[in-house]
Length: 350
Image 1: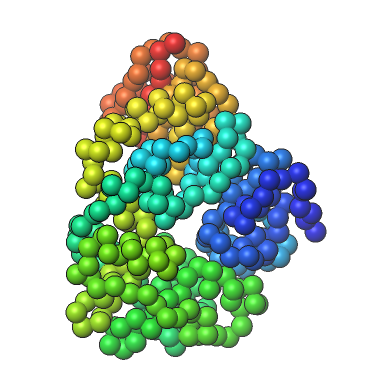
Image 2 (image 1 turned 90 degrees about the vertical axis):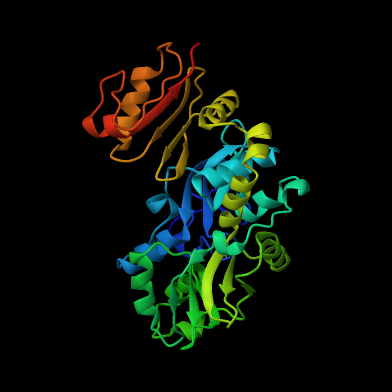
């Protein structure tokens, strides 16, 4: 049986490495947890990971957060600059961000809704039609579908929710990851979507603008909203992250003036705060060491952790100017073929 350390600064959206999986999300909150070890952020735990383990036949009652946590941590040193934060959410299409102190200690867990709220009010008068950025034809299901079939579909396709529709295509409810997890923790009894979905579903017209949609989402404290056409049929889905992306695009000049003009400057800003970052599959990783030379490293695909550690070791003590490797261009150092095709990397002259 795993015990939970008492030497932690905790909130509802954190767990420790020893927290049993079956209680990691028992108090609701966000669908992601920051995993702490001796007060420092060492990983993240996604609700989806628990569903994957259960679907694979593993007993999550006998597992702890450390067994499946992701060590690629979406994090940054605590900042009050809402423009910086929004740019980060938008650029990597993140749903949440772990804020740390300069020693890697947990401070706060921010979601996209909070990121929007942190922006200057002058930027929130956005009137872009929601049809221009909503997810068209989102994944739907019917109330009589078995949850066992839903779980299989959930794991085959990246989903944050399923919209439950009647035969006419009108929204009856919504099934989220937390709803499916409740069913898993109950022992996966024979049940249909109707037994676990939540209602009523808050909807908006797909003829609305983003400002109107955000106003409803904020009032109801929800992170996603179903869009309907003029006949009440489900036509799309909008999330808080989608709104941030659209806002950053429509206000690009403002964001470039007051936030970070490009990726390199963003990396430079993080470096001043003692951060070394890497990005893989839209996940930002915070390494546990400080270095005044290395600014950042980004890779797209084909690079395992061992390759990255080797590259960091090779370049830590050299004093070259900023280098930027574009897809297909040769790297200025020895690397595997996969890494050579996929890496963009920055470093700062001492």
